[in-house]
Length: 468
Image 1 (cartoon, rainbow, N blue to C red):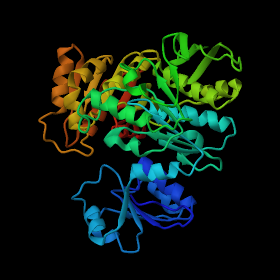
Image 2 (tube, one colour; image 1 turned 90 degrees about the vertical axis):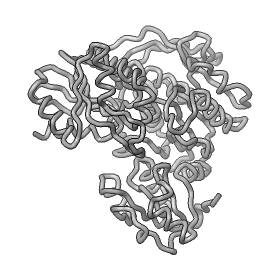
Image 3 (cartoon, helix red, strand yellow; image 1 turned 120 degrees about the vertical axis):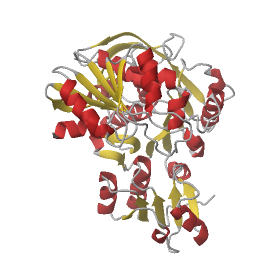
Image 4 (cartoon, rainbow, N blue to C red; image 1 turned 45 degrees about the vertical axis):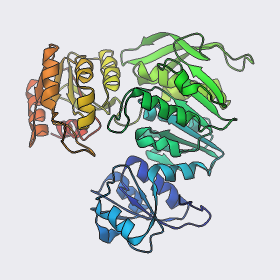
């Protein structure tokens, strides 16, 4: 594998430089005086920001973008072997690293690299941890899979030896990392276009946990099914959190205010030093019960780092979430419009349960399924989760990296929802979004709650409505 010498900056080219993770890595290299160039399909706020900092950006991916003066090419799992830039890279004999391999090499430059993993909740928990570290004045470098308003983006370059990043399991990316502290939030079946089954996924998380050195620490949700398959044989310290009092951290007395923000009692079942109270009440600025469990992981990390309890309290109250995580976009004709990135049945359930604790007359959900493989694998689970909404509107599946070879469509999900008694309408292309917007304007009423949901471009529907 090619090894970067950060004391000798080189020219690095990013295929897909506008991605949420790739753009952050490019910005880190720019601050280290590397020459950075790259390509993406279209211009975005992230590519404009990189260009303003000195990166050369090409729009459209073609072989002519690459040249022999490039020392290293970085690519993501979305880049296929038939990509013209990938072919040009091979023909020119250029050195290359995957996005995950580059991120792993960057982590080596820090004394305390922290990796936050899990099927769900990575971005929200990374946001919470980031807020705590910032409020504590620890000046971390942060790489977040979403836009955090507190730092005005997805990346922050700090001057300390602390580095925090999300660790995604897809294509085993996180196995290229070098963490000193790792968090495992949850493990469920997902990315079944890559993993064989849930056992394959558990084995991947075990290998990730085993990357920790003997003096490292794993913070893990003890409620994970068959959690021992992840923790068995590890030589590092293990800190557990969950619902049981046998965990190092547990909770009770969860309540919600009228905006779905949670309060709860944290129980520390292990602290003999009495540095922190054994029982302590917390209030969150973010919404939903799922964020209570994310907060447990963040609190456990803060305790491990010796951060004062008062700072943690203040940080968790200040943190309201990242963009596209139950984000209130605005109101139109008395209708509150929320946007959420949920694209897995568990995430959808968490978001719609949060909505039930939020002011509403009726809950409308515009759900854009993400990838054919995920839709086919979880069709009945999607239907059960979405049935928590009063009315569901479906555009076509967002294909992302896939081609339609499985014979699955949003119509199949519509049928499954109707079989459960949930009112559901399907709006196919070519003008699905436009027809959904017309339907909403005609049928939604004052005090209704409209949620645009999915990992694709469904957010545009709410933004278009607000602009009308």
